Length: 579
Image (cartoon, rainbow, N blue to C red):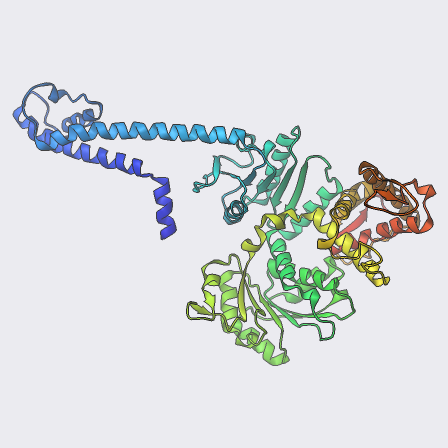
């Protein structure tokens, strides 16, 4: 109620309310006053519309009956002052609105490096709030406008050239296409790219896609033609981003190797549950050792969904022992499942098809409450009032089972500018490093003391991180050279294996790319590597490299199918084999 009241005050400022009150008072008092006054002046009309007409004339200081002489009734005396005052206040308000609109246009015309959020739904609203919290200047583009004094608003179709041009997207640093329809967001991204193609400002465009499979398909197509221009495009799915955030927070890969792996129970077969299972497996994959992560996935159609997910992400069976359980998504069914199996999960994630279902399961599945503190996670679309009400002290409205129960808001987690910046290119660059440099070198017995790249991504130098990004951007060029393409992995087809001649060809291309990048940084040849002095022994053509140096590039190329598979992609041949 407080929010609605504050919005009402913003929408109807005090001056507007005063103008309306004065006008109504002037009109009513004028009507009453003229009714009394004209009884003594029969030369004027006395009908309802006559009295109303004379009262309206007061607002322009020109009421015909007042041209004569004589005293006026008190109501008419008040009315002939209140009516012009209402007219004056209305004129002042009109000037204010025109001035505010012109000022808004001037501010929009001078903006640079701002963020543009397209759409009016919950995702757009949450993202706008987070951007403002981060100190960013935000321009909101929607058909209904944004009722927020701290946000510049452009009212119009977010996919139209006119609205996006008015929002200054060519001078923006980031554009977030968050309309409810995924097709509209693709159109917004295309329109922004058209407007910004001749600009000198770097621009990152993020387009929300509601369906995970469609998002993957769009990412694959864009990755094959990833632009190296100033516009960097990414398609994102809210559930996938939120699941990635939760998996990062859980830090399951840091589990003590001396103790058995934690048993995870995921209740619900929802898009978020699907994404969470993949992200937990991906994080567990980073952990040294061969222990499989035990996961029970319980819910309607869990078996069929697991089969489909395993076909898309082949590494699931390599790092996890997943057991699907077909049950109704209710608290009583979860209690019966845990009682029948005698399982005691260390982590329970409830991700039903709706917030109401998830709440009902969590609050009634008492057999799942026997977890360590923080071990029972309730997924909601937004953290909201329910999450804020949980606690275990006297000030809490709802008991959180002594710290065992916590809520996780999907929109709260996903609508973070820093997480959205971790786009597909960034994600694949991270996977490439973790798969090839960190995990690969660790398995070969190397350490941080022997090689600077044997560290987690967050501790990797900025130059090495950027080199991995550029390697990802070059994937499309390499695959086109083999007449191949990237596609979502949707079936259990045999993994793509590069022939040795293809490995050699792509390794040469990779070395040329690396060489160009290093020369642009000022590196020169020297027998002993010294990054501070920008000297590297591999600063020479492929034919002059040592065999160990060539093998590094070959290993990076051979890892490419696995890197793409980790993100749910596969390499496909565009030319049939044998043709």
